[in-house]
Image (cartoon, rainbow, N blue to C red):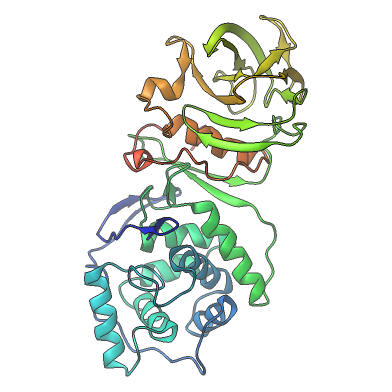
Length: 381
Protein backbone atom coordinates (compact mmCIF):
# COMPACT_ATOMS: atom_id res chain seq x y z
CA UNK A 1 0.00 0.00 0.00
CA UNK A 2 1.72 3.10 -1.22
CA UNK A 3 2.62 5.98 1.07
CA UNK A 4 4.76 8.17 -1.16
CA UNK A 5 6.59 7.55 -4.43
CA UNK A 6 8.94 4.64 -3.92
CA UNK A 7 7.71 3.76 -0.43
CA UNK A 8 5.07 1.28 0.63
CA UNK A 9 3.55 -0.15 3.74
CA UNK A 10 2.22 -3.68 3.94
CA UNK A 11 -0.83 -3.92 6.10
CA UNK A 12 -3.55 -6.52 6.47
CA UNK A 13 -5.82 -7.38 9.33
CA UNK A 14 -9.30 -7.66 10.67
CA UNK A 15 -10.81 -4.38 11.82
CA UNK A 16 -13.99 -3.42 13.62
CA UNK A 17 -15.14 -0.47 11.57
CA UNK A 18 -17.79 2.14 12.20
CA UNK A 19 -19.82 3.10 9.14
CA UNK A 20 -21.06 6.61 8.55
CA UNK A 21 -24.68 5.64 8.03
CA UNK A 22 -24.74 2.43 10.03
CA UNK A 23 -22.46 0.18 12.06
CA UNK A 24 -20.88 -2.62 10.06
CA UNK A 25 -18.77 -5.28 11.72
CA UNK A 26 -16.42 -6.99 9.34
CA UNK A 27 -16.06 -10.71 9.91
CA UNK A 28 -12.76 -12.51 10.28
CA UNK A 29 -10.80 -12.83 7.08
CA UNK A 30 -7.11 -13.56 7.28
CA UNK A 31 -6.40 -11.50 4.19
CA UNK A 32 -8.09 -13.71 1.66
CA UNK A 33 -8.71 -17.44 1.49
CA UNK A 34 -10.61 -20.13 -0.33
CA UNK A 35 -11.71 -17.92 -3.22
CA UNK A 36 -13.83 -19.47 -5.97
CA UNK A 37 -12.86 -19.73 -9.62
CA UNK A 38 -13.91 -16.81 -11.80
CA UNK A 39 -13.79 -16.17 -15.51
CA UNK A 40 -10.53 -15.27 -17.22
CA UNK A 41 -10.27 -12.17 -19.44
CA UNK A 42 -10.55 -12.84 -23.15
CA UNK A 43 -7.15 -11.21 -23.64
CA UNK A 44 -4.34 -9.81 -21.50
CA UNK A 45 -5.42 -6.75 -19.54
CA UNK A 46 -3.01 -3.85 -19.20
CA UNK A 47 -4.83 -0.51 -19.23
CA UNK A 48 -7.16 1.02 -16.69
CA UNK A 49 -10.04 0.75 -19.15
CA UNK A 50 -9.38 -2.96 -19.73
CA UNK A 51 -9.22 -3.60 -16.01
CA UNK A 52 -12.51 -1.79 -15.41
CA UNK A 53 -14.23 -3.77 -18.17
CA UNK A 54 -12.91 -7.08 -16.85
CA UNK A 55 -14.16 -6.37 -13.33
CA UNK A 56 -17.51 -5.35 -14.79
CA UNK A 57 -17.67 -8.73 -16.53
CA UNK A 58 -17.29 -10.32 -13.09
CA UNK A 59 -20.29 -8.56 -11.61
CA UNK A 60 -18.80 -5.29 -10.37
CA UNK A 61 -20.64 -2.09 -11.25
CA UNK A 62 -18.85 0.42 -13.51
CA UNK A 63 -18.33 2.85 -10.62
CA UNK A 64 -17.23 0.04 -8.31
CA UNK A 65 -14.78 -1.34 -10.85
CA UNK A 66 -13.32 2.12 -11.43
CA UNK A 67 -12.97 2.61 -7.67
CA UNK A 68 -10.89 -0.56 -7.45
CA UNK A 69 -8.73 0.38 -10.41
CA UNK A 70 -8.18 3.87 -9.03
CA UNK A 71 -6.71 2.31 -5.91
CA UNK A 72 -4.53 -0.05 -7.93
CA UNK A 73 -3.23 2.95 -9.86
CA UNK A 74 -2.21 4.62 -6.61
CA UNK A 75 -0.71 1.44 -5.17
CA UNK A 76 1.35 0.27 -8.13
CA UNK A 77 0.82 2.43 -11.18
CA UNK A 78 -1.09 -0.59 -12.60
CA UNK A 79 2.19 -2.49 -12.78
CA UNK A 80 1.63 -6.14 -11.74
CA UNK A 81 5.36 -6.62 -11.09
CA UNK A 82 5.76 -3.47 -8.97
CA UNK A 83 8.08 -4.19 -6.00
CA UNK A 84 6.00 -4.68 -2.88
CA UNK A 85 3.78 -7.41 -4.32
CA UNK A 86 1.79 -6.46 -7.36
CA UNK A 87 -1.14 -4.29 -8.29
CA UNK A 88 -2.55 -3.95 -4.78
CA UNK A 89 0.76 -4.22 -2.89
CA UNK A 90 -0.43 -7.31 -1.03
CA UNK A 91 1.53 -8.30 2.08
CA UNK A 92 3.60 -11.52 1.95
CA UNK A 93 0.95 -13.76 3.49
CA UNK A 94 -1.79 -12.37 1.29
CA UNK A 95 0.48 -12.67 -1.76
CA UNK A 96 1.04 -16.34 -0.98
CA UNK A 97 -2.75 -16.83 -1.04
CA UNK A 98 -2.88 -15.09 -4.43
CA UNK A 99 -0.13 -17.30 -5.84
CA UNK A 100 -1.89 -20.41 -4.54
CA UNK A 101 -5.17 -19.33 -6.13
CA UNK A 102 -3.55 -18.52 -9.48
CA UNK A 103 -1.76 -21.86 -9.51
CA UNK A 104 -5.10 -23.59 -8.98
CA UNK A 105 -6.63 -21.89 -12.02
CA UNK A 106 -3.57 -22.05 -14.28
CA UNK A 107 -2.71 -18.33 -14.16
CA UNK A 108 0.57 -16.49 -13.75
CA UNK A 109 0.51 -14.54 -10.50
CA UNK A 110 2.91 -11.95 -11.91
CA UNK A 111 0.42 -10.77 -14.51
CA UNK A 112 -2.45 -8.32 -14.27
CA UNK A 113 -4.77 -11.09 -15.45
CA UNK A 114 -3.84 -13.41 -12.61
CA UNK A 115 -4.05 -10.67 -10.00
CA UNK A 116 -7.38 -9.30 -11.23
CA UNK A 117 -8.85 -12.79 -11.27
CA UNK A 118 -7.81 -13.17 -7.63
CA UNK A 119 -9.47 -9.85 -6.77
CA UNK A 120 -12.65 -10.95 -8.55
CA UNK A 121 -12.58 -14.25 -6.69
CA UNK A 122 -12.21 -12.47 -3.35
CA UNK A 123 -15.16 -10.24 -4.18
CA UNK A 124 -17.28 -13.35 -4.56
CA UNK A 125 -16.11 -14.90 -1.30
CA UNK A 126 -14.45 -13.18 1.68
CA UNK A 127 -15.20 -9.70 0.34
CA UNK A 128 -18.74 -10.28 -0.91
CA UNK A 129 -19.88 -7.62 1.58
CA UNK A 130 -17.56 -5.13 -0.14
CA UNK A 131 -18.85 -6.11 -3.58
CA UNK A 132 -22.37 -5.33 -2.36
CA UNK A 133 -21.32 -1.87 -1.21
CA UNK A 134 -19.24 -1.16 -4.32
CA UNK A 135 -22.24 -1.94 -6.47
CA UNK A 136 -24.28 0.56 -4.46
CA UNK A 137 -21.70 3.36 -4.85
CA UNK A 138 -23.04 6.41 -6.64
CA UNK A 139 -19.68 7.57 -8.01
CA UNK A 140 -16.22 6.15 -8.71
CA UNK A 141 -14.86 8.46 -6.02
CA UNK A 142 -17.16 6.97 -3.39
CA UNK A 143 -16.23 3.46 -4.54
CA UNK A 144 -12.54 4.37 -4.31
CA UNK A 145 -12.92 5.28 -0.64
CA UNK A 146 -14.82 2.02 -0.06
CA UNK A 147 -11.94 -0.02 -1.50
CA UNK A 148 -9.36 2.14 0.25
CA UNK A 149 -10.97 1.64 3.67
CA UNK A 150 -12.34 -1.88 3.22
CA UNK A 151 -9.54 -3.64 1.33
CA UNK A 152 -6.32 -1.63 1.14
CA UNK A 153 -6.50 -0.19 4.68
CA UNK A 154 -3.52 2.09 4.09
CA UNK A 155 -1.98 4.24 6.79
CA UNK A 156 -4.51 6.89 7.69
CA UNK A 157 -7.59 4.66 7.41
CA UNK A 158 -9.39 4.70 10.75
CA UNK A 159 -12.58 2.86 9.86
CA UNK A 160 -15.13 2.26 7.16
CA UNK A 161 -15.25 5.34 4.92
CA UNK A 162 -12.96 7.11 7.41
CA UNK A 163 -9.56 8.47 6.40
CA UNK A 164 -7.51 10.95 8.39
CA UNK A 165 -7.50 14.25 6.47
CA UNK A 166 -4.10 14.82 4.88
CA UNK A 167 -2.86 11.30 5.67
CA UNK A 168 -0.39 9.40 3.55
CA UNK A 169 -3.16 7.27 2.03
CA UNK A 170 -3.43 10.09 -0.52
CA UNK A 171 -7.16 9.48 -0.84
CA UNK A 172 -7.56 12.38 -3.27
CA UNK A 173 -5.29 10.68 -5.81
CA UNK A 174 -7.14 7.37 -5.51
CA UNK A 175 -10.43 9.09 -6.18
CA UNK A 176 -9.13 11.06 -9.15
CA UNK A 177 -7.61 7.93 -10.68
CA UNK A 178 -10.97 6.19 -10.23
CA UNK A 179 -12.82 8.94 -12.08
CA UNK A 180 -10.23 8.83 -14.87
CA UNK A 181 -10.53 5.03 -15.12
CA UNK A 182 -14.30 5.17 -15.53
CA UNK A 183 -13.99 7.78 -18.27
CA UNK A 184 -11.31 5.69 -20.01
CA UNK A 185 -13.70 2.72 -20.00
CA UNK A 186 -16.39 4.79 -21.68
CA UNK A 187 -18.32 5.69 -18.56
CA UNK A 188 -19.61 9.05 -17.41
CA UNK A 189 -18.51 10.86 -14.26
CA UNK A 190 -21.04 13.37 -12.99
CA UNK A 191 -18.34 15.64 -11.57
CA UNK A 192 -14.82 15.54 -10.20
CA UNK A 193 -15.85 16.07 -6.61
CA UNK A 194 -13.94 13.98 -4.12
CA UNK A 195 -15.17 12.56 -0.87
CA UNK A 196 -13.51 13.64 2.34
CA UNK A 197 -13.86 11.00 5.01
CA UNK A 198 -13.35 12.77 8.32
CA UNK A 199 -12.45 11.09 11.60
CA UNK A 200 -13.16 12.45 15.07
CA UNK A 201 -11.46 10.58 17.88
CA UNK A 202 -13.74 8.89 20.40
CA UNK A 203 -16.92 9.29 18.37
CA UNK A 204 -18.99 6.58 16.74
CA UNK A 205 -20.64 8.85 14.23
CA UNK A 206 -18.33 10.41 11.69
CA UNK A 207 -19.16 12.48 8.67
CA UNK A 208 -18.31 12.51 4.99
CA UNK A 209 -17.81 15.69 3.00
CA UNK A 210 -17.72 16.03 -0.75
CA UNK A 211 -14.78 18.00 -2.12
CA UNK A 212 -17.05 20.12 -4.27
CA UNK A 213 -14.81 23.18 -4.37
CA UNK A 214 -17.20 25.09 -2.14
CA UNK A 215 -18.87 25.27 1.24
CA UNK A 216 -21.99 27.43 1.30
CA UNK A 217 -21.02 30.93 2.36
CA UNK A 218 -17.25 30.30 2.27
CA UNK A 219 -14.63 30.97 -0.39
CA UNK A 220 -11.08 30.17 -1.44
CA UNK A 221 -8.84 32.63 0.45
CA UNK A 222 -6.18 32.34 -2.27
CA UNK A 223 -8.52 33.05 -5.19
CA UNK A 224 -6.88 36.43 -5.91
CA UNK A 225 -3.29 35.40 -5.21
CA UNK A 226 -0.93 35.80 -8.17
CA UNK A 227 2.01 33.54 -8.96
CA UNK A 228 1.25 31.27 -6.05
CA UNK A 229 3.77 28.56 -5.14
CA UNK A 230 2.64 26.04 -2.53
CA UNK A 231 5.17 24.96 0.05
CA UNK A 232 5.20 22.59 2.99
CA UNK A 233 2.53 21.85 5.58
CA UNK A 234 3.73 22.18 9.17
CA UNK A 235 1.70 24.01 11.84
CA UNK A 236 -0.29 25.48 8.98
CA UNK A 237 -0.07 25.65 5.20
CA UNK A 238 2.83 27.59 3.67
CA UNK A 239 2.82 29.39 0.33
CA UNK A 240 4.61 32.14 -1.58
CA UNK A 241 3.19 34.52 -4.20
CA UNK A 242 3.66 37.87 -5.89
CA UNK A 243 3.93 40.92 -3.58
CA UNK A 244 0.70 42.87 -3.40
CA UNK A 245 -1.51 39.78 -3.83
CA UNK A 246 -4.79 40.01 -1.95
CA UNK A 247 -5.27 37.65 1.01
CA UNK A 248 -8.94 36.97 1.69
CA UNK A 249 -11.15 35.84 4.54
CA UNK A 250 -12.29 32.30 3.70
CA UNK A 251 -15.41 32.74 5.88
CA UNK A 252 -17.26 35.59 7.58
CA UNK A 253 -14.83 36.43 10.38
CA UNK A 254 -13.95 38.90 13.13
CA UNK A 255 -10.34 40.06 13.51
CA UNK A 256 -9.65 39.33 17.18
CA UNK A 257 -5.90 39.60 17.73
CA UNK A 258 -2.74 41.04 16.20
CA UNK A 259 0.48 39.15 16.99
CA UNK A 260 3.41 41.50 16.35
CA UNK A 261 6.19 38.91 16.26
CA UNK A 262 4.80 35.61 15.06
CA UNK A 263 7.99 34.52 13.30
CA UNK A 264 11.23 36.35 12.51
CA UNK A 265 9.70 39.73 13.36
CA UNK A 266 6.67 39.15 11.12
CA UNK A 267 3.06 39.40 12.30
CA UNK A 268 0.01 37.17 12.48
CA UNK A 269 -3.66 38.07 12.21
CA UNK A 270 -5.95 35.90 14.34
CA UNK A 271 -9.59 35.71 13.26
CA UNK A 272 -12.72 33.93 14.45
CA UNK A 273 -15.28 32.51 12.04
CA UNK A 274 -18.66 34.08 12.82
CA UNK A 275 -21.09 31.99 10.78
CA UNK A 276 -21.49 28.77 8.81
CA UNK A 277 -20.36 25.23 9.68
CA UNK A 278 -17.04 26.47 11.13
CA UNK A 279 -18.53 29.20 13.33
CA UNK A 280 -16.45 29.74 16.45
CA UNK A 281 -13.19 28.38 15.02
CA UNK A 282 -10.05 30.50 15.16
CA UNK A 283 -7.68 30.76 12.21
CA UNK A 284 -4.77 32.93 11.11
CA UNK A 285 -2.80 34.53 8.31
CA UNK A 286 0.84 35.09 9.23
CA UNK A 287 4.40 36.13 8.30
CA UNK A 288 4.77 38.05 5.02
CA UNK A 289 1.52 39.99 5.37
CA UNK A 290 0.27 43.55 5.67
CA UNK A 291 -3.15 43.71 7.38
CA UNK A 292 -5.73 45.94 5.68
CA UNK A 293 -8.37 45.83 8.44
CA UNK A 294 -8.11 46.66 12.12
CA UNK A 295 -8.55 44.49 15.21
CA UNK A 296 -12.22 44.26 16.11
CA UNK A 297 -13.43 44.68 12.55
CA UNK A 298 -15.43 42.03 10.75
CA UNK A 299 -14.93 40.79 7.21
CA UNK A 300 -17.16 38.99 4.75
CA UNK A 301 -16.10 35.79 3.06
CA UNK A 302 -13.98 36.79 0.08
CA UNK A 303 -13.07 40.21 1.48
CA UNK A 304 -9.44 41.31 1.33
CA UNK A 305 -8.08 41.47 4.88
CA UNK A 306 -4.35 41.65 4.11
CA UNK A 307 -1.91 41.84 1.25
CA UNK A 308 1.26 39.91 0.56
CA UNK A 309 4.14 42.09 1.74
CA UNK A 310 7.20 42.91 -0.42
CA UNK A 311 9.64 41.01 1.80
CA UNK A 312 9.58 38.15 4.28
CA UNK A 313 9.38 34.38 4.62
CA UNK A 314 6.19 33.81 2.60
CA UNK A 315 2.88 33.16 4.40
CA UNK A 316 1.33 30.56 6.64
CA UNK A 317 -2.40 30.00 7.13
CA UNK A 318 -4.06 27.55 9.50
CA UNK A 319 -6.07 26.92 12.66
CA UNK A 320 -5.27 28.94 15.82
CA UNK A 321 -5.54 28.02 19.52
CA UNK A 322 -6.60 31.31 21.14
CA UNK A 323 -5.94 30.40 24.77
CA UNK A 324 -2.54 28.92 23.96
CA UNK A 325 -1.66 31.96 21.87
CA UNK A 326 -0.20 29.94 18.99
CA UNK A 327 -1.19 27.76 16.03
CA UNK A 328 -3.30 24.76 16.93
CA UNK A 329 -0.66 22.54 15.34
CA UNK A 330 1.83 23.81 17.89
CA UNK A 331 -0.43 22.71 20.73
CA UNK A 332 -0.36 19.14 19.39
CA UNK A 333 3.40 19.04 19.70
CA UNK A 334 5.35 20.35 16.74
CA UNK A 335 8.66 19.28 15.21
CA UNK A 336 10.11 21.96 12.94
CA UNK A 337 9.37 21.25 9.29
CA UNK A 338 7.04 18.34 9.93
CA UNK A 339 3.32 18.10 9.45
CA UNK A 340 0.79 18.43 12.24
CA UNK A 341 -2.73 17.07 12.05
CA UNK A 342 -4.10 20.61 12.28
CA UNK A 343 -1.88 21.73 9.41
CA UNK A 344 -2.81 18.78 7.25
CA UNK A 345 -6.46 19.35 8.03
CA UNK A 346 -6.36 23.02 7.01
CA UNK A 347 -4.67 22.03 3.76
CA UNK A 348 -7.58 19.68 3.13
CA UNK A 349 -10.03 22.48 3.91
CA UNK A 350 -8.31 24.66 1.32
CA UNK A 351 -8.87 21.94 -1.26
CA UNK A 352 -12.52 21.76 -0.27
CA UNK A 353 -12.72 25.49 -0.96
CA UNK A 354 -11.23 25.12 -4.42
CA UNK A 355 -7.52 25.75 -3.84
CA UNK A 356 -5.01 23.23 -5.18
CA UNK A 357 -2.35 22.96 -2.46
CA UNK A 358 -1.31 19.37 -3.28
CA UNK A 359 -0.13 17.08 -0.50
CA UNK A 360 2.49 19.33 1.08
CA UNK A 361 6.20 18.66 1.34
CA UNK A 362 5.95 18.92 5.10
CA UNK A 363 4.05 15.63 5.30
CA UNK A 364 7.32 13.95 6.17
CA UNK A 365 6.65 11.94 9.31
CA UNK A 366 4.01 9.27 10.03
CA UNK A 367 2.24 11.56 12.48
CA UNK A 368 -1.17 11.40 10.76
CA UNK A 369 -1.11 7.61 11.16
CA UNK A 370 -1.25 8.09 14.94
CA UNK A 371 -4.83 9.21 15.15
CA UNK A 372 -5.54 12.33 17.16
CA UNK A 373 -8.41 14.77 16.91
CA UNK A 374 -9.34 15.88 13.40
CA UNK A 375 -10.01 19.59 13.21
CA UNK A 376 -12.18 19.43 10.13
CA UNK A 377 -15.77 20.43 10.98
CA UNK A 378 -18.19 17.75 12.07
CA UNK A 379 -21.71 17.64 10.66
CA UNK A 380 -24.95 16.84 12.42
CA UNK A 381 -25.43 13.08 12.50
